[in-house]
Image (cartoon, rainbow, N blue to C red; front, side, top):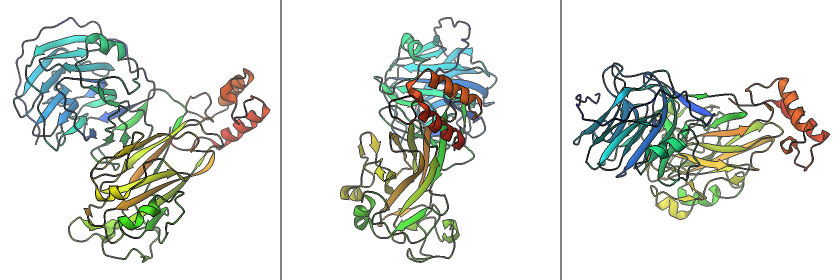
Length: 501
């Protein structure tokens, strides 16, 4: 059922809006393209605050024909805390309203949002007055005078649709979505609208820059770490926005996941029995490999954990029976070992990804843990968040995005291995689903001129920097720029850039 709203007549005080800026977000990396049919980005968490600012760069190409198309909203289909969107196609003015389904108060803009152009859109509310901005200029203001109300346990932050389960989508491009727990001034909005944030600015409670070049995660760069999923689930589906880039770059993504055939290894036993094994240093130590199986390891009782069904690649859906739940006593834990090849020399690299619900897990890069180690207390406190150094423990009762951040020195030239150890609660029930999807994002030095292609022009670009004795040309790390570095670079160029740009 769509969220129907009556038209609202409002009294507004307006400051003149100047000519549209010829602008686009200044980060120069990635953005998301929404099809306007079903694409959405969703994040769990409590985004409620008495005062607030919501900002986004948007290039709309398609709006709902009848109802407000959502840019950034927080709530459920039946009630929401705030909705920030663009009116129907025939009246594309900004809309911002609070407390839908529970005494709605609304402000409507005066200027139409331009179609097919990048614009910076913002709404602020200080608990009394709401204001709308287009490209940093005040478009409208109105006294709403009500407190922003909670919208229930099913509330989601939704980007690109007006609410979870609604069908009031914005088609077009999105970037630099920011939420604050303060009502920012016009000058504060203008001062930062063209500048990527560091993520630790005072008052920032969510920041999605969409600069990941692959995977299902939209990383929240704010201290809150409420990462979002492309689409409504962590698994790839038809409602996922498409990743795009402003210009080519050296950044490449290698996507890895538990659905890779031939890389599954099981560990048999309950949580308490496995804690020592899961945390036992390099993952090859103490973990018993018994069979190669598919992502959804927690099979029904169709076969025992120590039996081999005679198939090299098993889809657990083949074995589902009864209701869609599975007991975890059968195959209660697993680890995955996924090898991948990198160029001889690798630029800056980081790892992020999505983990399944209701499991506890740790991840290793080349034998080094990049997530907190499990403890016996974790096994008895499933559902209680815990993190170390800003990295959450992987896999709580919601499908979690985890972000390991930069891993300097861990991703190396040549063969690498990511291992993912999963430990399930043997007394719980869990729907079948993916275990994890990981992305290794790195700077590929073979594309030295960062034009997106590996070609002969890269030779000239590297040799120019090498001739200038640029420290970046010291690829073997010996502190000197000499002929040895040329050999290293030629090997790197010959290997190329695995993964997607």
